[in-house]
Image (cartoon, rainbow, N blue to C red):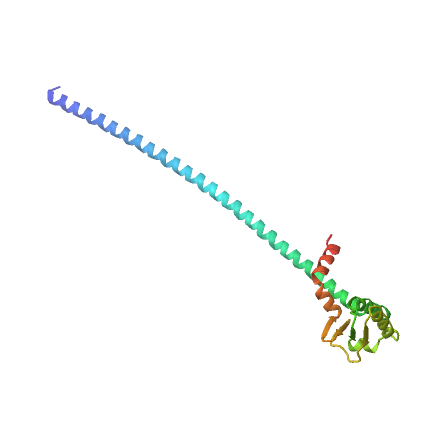
Length: 197
């Protein structure tokens, strides 16, 4: 082998070693880049999974709270409807009491509103037509016990039931609906306690 062949062989060998070294370095760098990419991808995946899970839990809790609030509103609306329906039935029942019981109830209610003054009692047209014979006498006795007087008006009051009691310029509407409206919150509370224990 001549010197030229030896030089060529040596150059070829050095070139091959350089190529192998470059390829190994490139493969090593590629493996490092791939490992770094895999690590970043895995971290991004885990972060995304964690965030998605946290968001899903938050959405679930919000949905549960929303459904719970909606159910509570519906239950409350249903209770209010039942109570209001019960109030309407009570008014109708009071209105349709037998005559004797109806006017005894009126007398009890009137006794709570009497003043030591001259009063005028107004009844609706239907009640004026069915006033018991002793009603005015009972009114007079009640008023006198309270150091006042009361007169039954012959002019029908513009109410469906109950009465209007006037002392001078001040009139108090004591129809069953007006009494219940004035005490509605207490009545609702009492009805709720009875109906929904």
